[in-house]
Image (cartoon, rainbow, N blue to C red; front, side, top):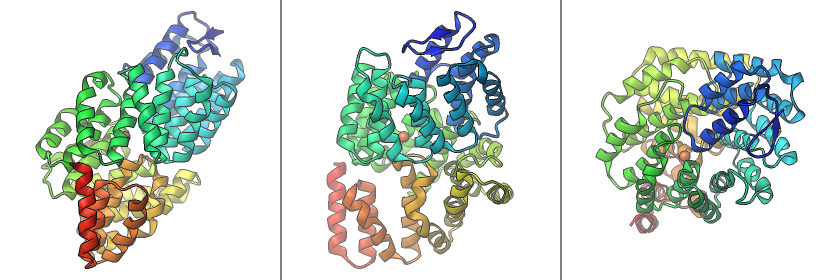
Length: 458
Ligand SMILES: [Fe+2]
């Protein structure tokens, strides 16, 4: 039996395994190093280290690869084979991993939360629950999970700052921006390299339309998150959002080329960022050259995966944008077969939301705005179920707005924005709201929306 740096017992045969586990968790907190490779190497020489296989498989899943990925399956089998030799806490981890590997991420998250109810300092459980809820857009659970254990922590406990960063992101996704920013900034104060804390603050600034502050904040902290090989691409992506609003397109393109597009085919979350950025640029009428072509090569490995509706939508957008009609046809057939042959929650989400969203984005890219609006408008309030963050999903709102406006449905565009503008006004939302109001003939209200947007960005 070994004891990790948080005082939790875990099963290991070799004394050095504890150092490897602690160091992998340190890397995980910082999104740096090679925790997957290190854990795997440790697990392969320590016959009892079930948690190593468990965390390795989870990290792969959270990177966005499907449960059908051969390595995930191998690691799940290796963890399960050791299940009757480990503690009840570790057994619960293995069971949650097994649930996550079936694609039931919300349920897996709840299983990790159940571990936390007994072991509130189990950071591995906290991180796994956090990732699951984020990936399936369960913002209520995302917030509740980290906040529930926070009272059991204080600064004397390792990883306390990181927990604040996680709580900050949960609060941000729930729209509680003030408290989110407070906790996020405290997390960075404790550990400037806490890139997830940086990420939470970047989200707050984005959602509140604090464009110049967002640019200055990410530029000013960039040196601290450069070692975060598994997150820095996404933080560069975040920097691009206010830069686009600020009209700094050349810088956005060079950030894309230098810092975002250099990803591996298995880094699905990064592929999502690549696609989303190119799509946002094209929405603004900016020519992105042949950048879709390289993306198609990497996305092609995932055509038959359907691990997440969010990734499927980005895959469809990439294939249609690159003109890969044959591959797009293959993807849509494969997605249809997946929906027909699978009874998981993920398959249900893809069927009800992901599929029409894919088809709508495809139609939009082909210039069939009427069809795009017809497909996406009815599911607009359920798109959060495909996962990702509010800021990421904003791209679908932007696309739907364009589709509605270009197909003469200005009233629908206006009505769609009105409640959101009331609750969380952002500059891009206000600009789209203003355009919709202008298209309905209400120029006075449109000008007021444009003024509000301008006041937020200057
Ligand atoms: Fe983000």
